[in-house]
Amino acid sequence: MTTIVRRPTISVDVDGVQVRDVFSVTCSHGYDLAVAELTVVCPYVPSNLNYWSVVGVRAGANPGSAATRFNGFCVETDYTFYPRDMSIIGRGPLVRAQLVECSSAGGVDLSAGGAGQTDQAIVQQLLSACGATSGGPIPLSIGGLGRTLCTVAGTYFNWAEDQAALDMIQQL
Image 1 (cartoon, rainbow, N blue to C red):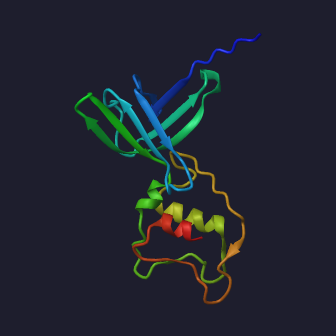
Image 2 (image 1 turned 90 degrees about the vertical axis):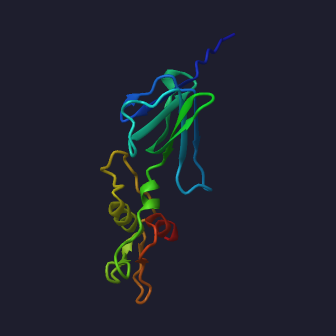
Image 3 (image 1 turned 45 degrees about the vertical axis):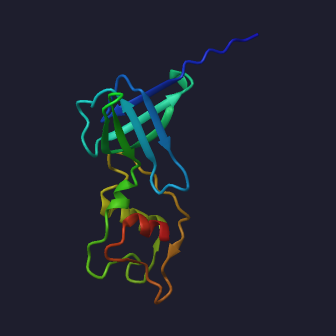
């Protein structure tokens, strides 16, 4: 009979530097969430932690099978006096699209003047406006159908003034 030994492992990195003494990690992904969420509880503030630091989590049944479970940004820290610990609150890379709103008066035409763009090109344009491009600190893979949208006269896609980029992406 074969014996399987599992040594659960978790690794939390902040800007590429491993965080020691992690008490707990909670990652939430799902269709009900617009942006992935992360909470890391540890006894101290990592010295290299800043707002918008890149936070990554790898976990698995053993070190050899550990896979990336979360990549995102630190958006908040929280302290608890008893028991003394601090929490790193992270959000997925789309948090930038959730926070950035269109500041152009009258909005931004995403239809290329009625000529149309693919859904991927529209999403890439919105993410670029937020500084969340594929060349950023967290690589983003833009999927989609590759269909050209907004080619019928009068049905222009407009990113409205004061509308969050993520709202416009979800509207597609």
